[in-house]
Length: 468
Ligand code: NAD
Ligand code: UGA
Image: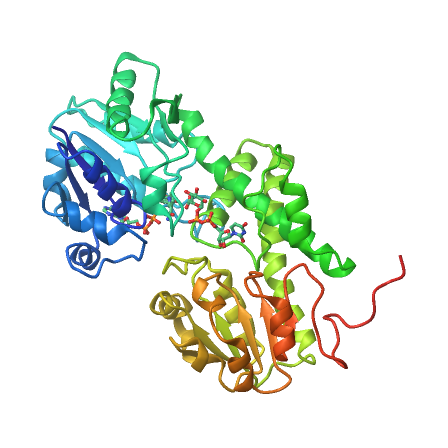
């Protein structure tokens, strides 16, 4: 039996530890956090995050071999293995602001572990960190002069929100990096043994520490790059009457390219893609690799362009003014099946429309509370409406910003009847059946496809297609 501790009870710490507790009933798993309200929520029936399947796993393990606590000191002292899963946001101040990872929470944790430890421990980096962070972690942990040796292991997390439980239960791979020393190998083996309870051996890969740390940043950069690539092509499709879905299908059927992550959209969001690419860019700049930094920075720039392009298409399609017009935004979460609104493209669009003085009505099945908090003072200018039909009533336009299945199930003929005319629909996720919407009376503007407008209405940007 091992005492496993996780510091940080967020979107990663909670679900990953719940699954470890479920799969390793002989181990005792404790999750701690400095936010008492978060811990109280983990102990209640209303978990602090929405994640499909999470309730069941927590119900099956909580107070058996899974515990939540704010008593960091006590649980650090008792732990054999400590996963560190604290937030590592982009730094917003000082050197590296807007790019570098803000490592203050991570460093506080390292110092806390050192202060409360009475014997040897394995410290596992679960948070996403700049490459070579383990070196700093080891220096902090092993310079206490108290004679306790710590082994630092990197075990980055690849789960995606909305599918976190499934991703944990059946991961594509588990990555574990450690030093190639006798104690490094022993520490690595201890972490391998945890995952070996349910992950096939060929899916548990081991590397040196720096490769593990860097692979996490690279995986997110490659995924985000695919979204930016198809979004860049969506802009060209809109100019040429090509259809981005058809292009993505034709390209993705090439086995070397693959079909996943080629859905054109209003842009990628979430707490990690932008942050991790910015961090990669910062690291490249730090090492003097200017061209490499510029290459990756373009992925973020393209994403920002896509969001701006979406809003400017709205403005130009709606006669160059949105002032006073009611616009229903369908979706606040950065993707479906999560309540997370961190860096959500939907909120970017919301902010831009408020700046255009539109009357914005925001609807989302799970994320309205987080959206209100994320928008801060701007929330005063936004109506939060849980019912999409009510949100659309009297609106000049609907914009689909999150691909929630419930938005695809609405009776758009009936919705159209309640809207101001001409009624517009901007599908930022290519979620809906555009032909039947057009048939129902909407002027439809998908991403990367020709708009379906009624006679007398123009394509965004105006004008006709240029002669070939
Ligand atoms: P989060 O903000 O949801 O959770 C982090 C938690 O750590 C917070 O509850 C915070 O209160 C707590 N914390 C901060 N400092 C602490 C301290 N000193 N002691 C105890 N608790 C402390 O963040 P998250 O989304 O779970 O992400 C955590 C890390 O995992 C980040 O590095 C992120 O990049 C990475 N990651 C996230 C995802 C994801 O889908 N969200 C996926 C893979 C990796
Ligand atoms: C992503 C990665 O997929 C995870 O492997 C990683 O662990 C995680 O980041 C992290 O480090 O935090 P996540 O951000 O939860 O997971 O969600 P994704 O499914 O990757 O989607 C990210 C964004 O890209 C969303 O806004 C989504 O709507 C958008 N997206 C995705 C597209 O616009 N098109 C696509 O084809 C795919």
